[in-house]
Amino acid sequence: MLFSEGGAEYDGMIQSLMMLALEANHVIGLRLMKQMRGAKRARRESQLMINENIDAAFKAGASMMAGGSAAKVVQGYRRRVAANAKRLSRSGLCLGESGANANSVD
Image (tube, rainbow, N blue to C red):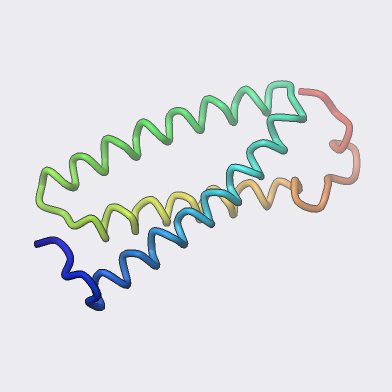
């Protein structure tokens, strides 16, 4: 059995899944802000998102076929989501960009 209901492993997995949902929601919001700005940056972000999702799905499937646990798959997704949140936050989307690039169109 993968989980014993009510056990510590089950509780940890539920917590990880809930955190993944919250973290992914944050990244979705950051990406939507980037999409609303339009231009080349938005197109690049869309292509990156599609490529990352396809890659993540293949890696998750390969991990499961090789005997990996669901917890490892969730951990891998959380790592990717955290990296995306960091990258998108660094681009100045949360606080607004200032300077010469603030109003530029790519």
